[in-house]
Length: 226
Ligand code: NI
Ligand code: MN
Image (cartoon, rainbow, N blue to C red; front, side, top):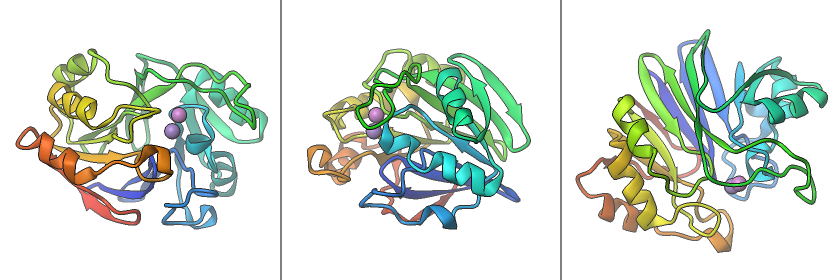
């Protein structure tokens, strides 16, 4: 049975048997971080977009573990330039890896990298990850978009990670609409309370989702089997 662990903000690890991957490994400088970068074991590092609170320690973790970074073409190449192994993909594309399948989805957001966010890293993305026969959707940073309905129609999503923190991404009400579109069995709210500007109440989200899906409110460091 695959397991997901929330490490704070948008950082999630997925594991199944010997396969381990990490998504958006922002640990250094993350006030919520439930692990240190050098504690992470991963064969693949997935990055949704070029913002610092998502790229985070990706290159360092990839180098230490001889892991492969999976990101859009532009961001993957940028990580490659910093010395990491990488597998570039792009929106709409899927690929079979040793642990399962990754498909890249759209996300509506930005992606500038570096101190002043000025380096181009291509468009932001979300990930559909199939591991251990189960499908996980990590939305990345995004506003609500109507194609989530299509993603829900075309995929049986067992577990969804959706931002609820507002300001930079969907807020609670839009994230509830996203659940309605995606129809996941379970949903975990992410990307809230890390900084004052994205404070949000996950219990309000759970209440508003109601019977649409099971809401799992994970504290940084919490794991769930799915
Ligand atoms: Ni962002
Ligand atoms: Mn973010």
